[in-house]
Image 1: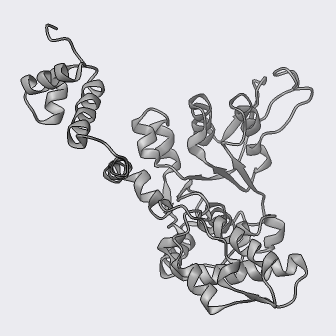
Image 2: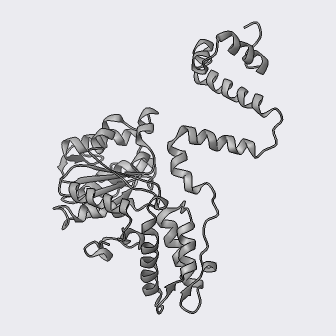
Image 3: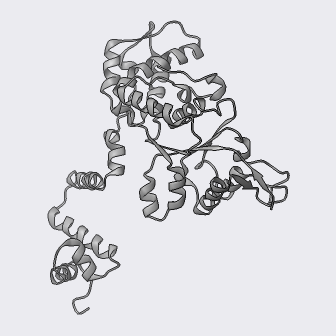
Length: 345
């Protein structure tokens, strides 16, 4: 178990201060954090939503020489696209409609400390270009200004998507990806570190009990077993909400299984795997087909595959046939039968 200095001053949410990592995988992660924290290298934290990426970023900051300076957390997906640049880099009076006064951006606010950019993959490409320049030059230019402002900021970015795929799709700049990816920290989902579940649950019980002004509340053994058996598709965020609700309805100072209202999402346990693995996504799509009553299902699936390959190849029959490993004549016959092309075309 580990703690952050003055944790209530660092964050207002209980989850952001839930400094309880006891699972072996979590301990490995903490050991890696201790190695990289003293440097000024940019850090990319990767993990599903609700796994505690901000907590990891705060721990990196707390173990660095910047610990006494500001830690600023910014969600890149929380601002309208037209305001992202102003929020990050600041603006001068009159820079745009509604800019009645000059305003420093988050980079300037975090000067000397750490700037945590959550959901970095949501940044528009135009802002990514300016962010790359800021990281390279260590200076910002406010909107409406030509004057550069020197900054000394360590950037810790986080994402719940695979940036490699975003780069391949043209949604994220490759040069920015490598600039941020100096150090990477992979944060496992809660279901992949079950040793953290009960310590976190007891931590949330203690915190919410104090907030609500309750007396002692225990987690019953059967309730603990129910928590351990759940796949936690919502990760630590879901666990916190489950415990909070349980404290509101439990009786006699004991949390029972009936007090734990758990998510019924069946696919949640494999959400990260399915998102990352094309084969898993295909299997999930097929499972949805199997649940429906399709006549001639096999032929229907063949048609879907052929049509997808044809469109992916920009309707080039030679390329589509090569993708599918069949001859052009076989592909052409299938496309004609499907009505995708005319027989005389």
